[in-house]
Image 1: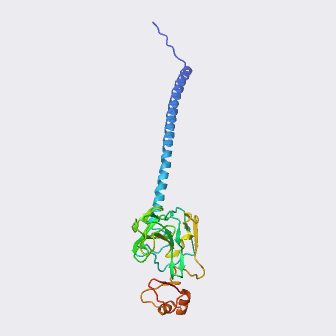
Image 2: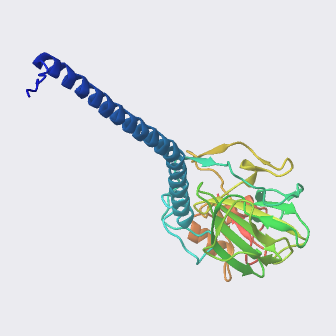
Image 3: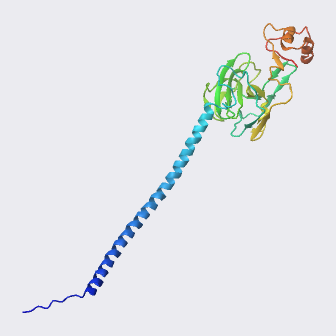
Length: 304
């Protein structure tokens, strides 16, 4: 018995193997494409999920940074302007030079009181022979007195014959504000406050003839008229900012110790004139007094 062996021609074998290889390669690349598409979809999904997180983290970072900056400002308000931070005095600064000009930011303000009646204004009082360093605003006992700007409480004290209960706050815009004749103080020294925070209750303590808020604004100890910044009758500030310019000529400044002098115990006209380099005649003429006038301790005399 003989068997016939069918031999597949070589070219048919090659064609068959090629077809098989193409089939496997097609399946392989289809798998790769499928895996790649799935990976791309997953990556896109991850990126889509990550984007809001990134934006949220960016917002958080921005908030944290702003808080750090604000904390620094409130910890040392106007640190580049003032020579020191002291809880030992209200507004006595030595060896300081006022800037030639300074833009004082008035945004973010709060009126210290909702009352609009101004009982007394800023300036020298010839009849009383004394200087009034601020504005007197009519308030009732117990009315809430609020911080005018963000800042930090620098000084709290009581003067029986002066301010009564009072608070001094330093602000990042360079101003220091003073609130006097309070019934009580609601803040403590070195406490950070925000504009509008209650800092005291209106009253009639100290040298006062009726309930009112005595309100001062000072720059490096120099008293500036609060009406330059605050319009109490209209419950607003005078603008978004105020440009302070240092006077080029000598002016009669009520807060300048070279212009006015507060009488102390043991003083006489001749002693004051000799100490300040003026004359008794000049002192009498400027202040409407005579050599026979009895000086009172605390009385303010105009020198020039």
